[in-house]
Length: 214
Image (cartoon, rainbow, N blue to C red; front, side):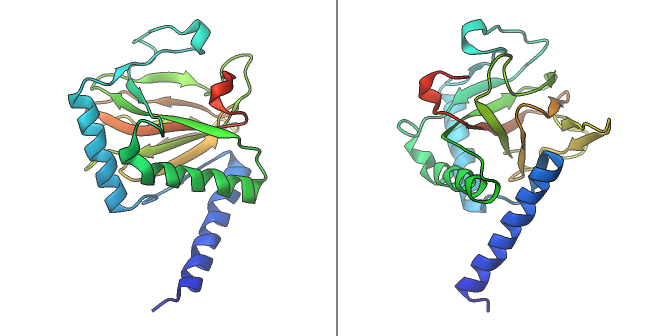
């Protein structure tokens, strides 16, 4: 049986590998990033929010120029708040740890993060874009955690990464998979969905979100 120290060293090595990939190729994805228990807790909370009608149609552009364009972006979202969404304490701890690891290993100056749940109904998508708003520079790293149980090829909703070398990579939105990429440089799109697609979407920020620097 592995000692606690051995387990910690193994996890530390994994963090090095993951973040080295992020630094070299501007994106990385990690399978089974969250536990089954946390996944089930998130799923239950997501379901309760839907039943209460808490999701609203997502917009494009920054807050002062926000527009609803379903042909460009078809998801519905619910913004998460540590002070409100107490049932997700373990998720927020996980995101805090994630931010700490990026500060530690990549020396990224992260001051805060923001995140929301996203639901793409069938036959919706999000056209190619970057996550940094024009004229803004606060978003540093984009973070996705997929929540799709029993996703199968043909269900759609893949994340297409457009690499700087001209190649394209399709990442399947498999449950508990983490994806991270640089917000200001990585062009990406969500492919058309054929079944409902669920995720947590977040951004590690240079300055606190409360300052209104988007």
